Length: 202
Image (cartoon, rainbow, N blue to C red; front, side, top):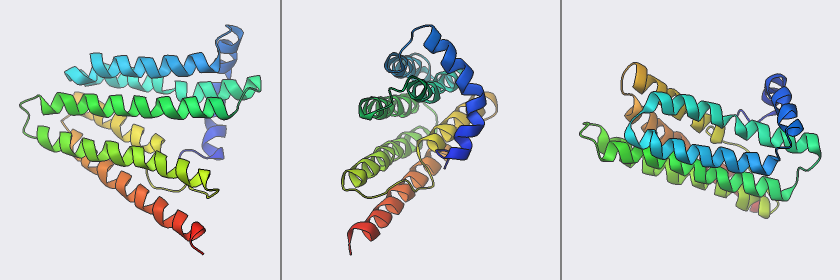
């Protein structure tokens, strides 16, 4: 839903100047992709897995912008291609898994009454999130389109980000957020299966 031309044009006014500065500093898109993924792993283990959701959310939001910067830099440099797309997509799966697993770890090892629910819903959300990406990759390898769905990566990350902020500043909403995340991720997978079937089954 957020991965569309209108959204990209809106964000370009903020992202392009930063991307140009990084290029002048001789930072490559690949290096930035690795850095963003590594930073997310550290944030997940050091902050989210310990329940420090406020600082974790702030850092998660900041380093999440790397997803916009590396692609923009590659386009500016004229180096966009299959390798960059592969690396970005692969490390995105690692980052997403680290965030959800760390939150699940915290709740599974806490005495909070909703701990088991968060951990269980988180596992479902993680699997369905990975399946969402796999369905698209497999469909495109079969020359089918598969860009639909109510919860792509951007929407899932926004939901987690908001849940982290609300849980740290207001009240614990993580169980609600993860249940919603599990449901919309599952619906997205079903949407993609149905959509691709219509293209491949004549």
